[in-house]
Image (cartoon, rainbow, N blue to C red; front, side, top):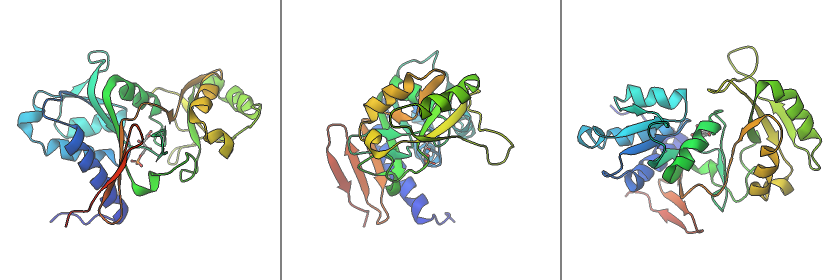
Length: 253
Ligand SMILES: O=C(CO)[C@H](O)[C@H](O)COP(=O)(O)O
């Protein structure tokens, strides 16, 4: 018997299934798989396309979690060095604004996520309705994830505090380990809550943060997303596309 999903899980699944059905076509052979709790539904739907279509596909991972997902699903794992150009990458998001700018990095994978997003001809994000907002920072409270070289962590916190509109910034701590979260690249993550004024221009903010010494990558994805799929509580899916088109696919009867 199929497990009964909670409303949030059902909306993640709906977004993921709709995005895969629309963007992962039989001719797509190189596919990036993102990180987070929505992405397993992406992999499930790709597996459901069948062994014939998946046999000659290669899947690239944004981190340890998606690597495990790919391997355990019996799909072929590849490396960005071998396959620097992908047909499509599908990933989760922490928040998406009206212009398809995103906060990503809630799972501390945003460096590799950005590499696979930029490598793809089409980058698509999937999420539940809570991630769909007008302005970044409205619904996602922890702030902008900033991956930083451990040696530069203290100086980054000082440099952030010295900005004209400083954020409230903290080193992300691990939950089931003493000490900080360590990324798949061996770095730390600082979460920085910026004033609304700064969040209104994510591109400018991204550039400002990127210039600070020791910053490896910033969890602001700007101008990369082609389409965002949000599963809604009523079973419909809201689709935001590059260029501003927003549509809602009605719930199945
Ligand atoms: O950016 C990410 C990890 O670094 C994830 O994609 C993001 O946190 C969304 O995860 P979820 O689908 O669990 O809400």
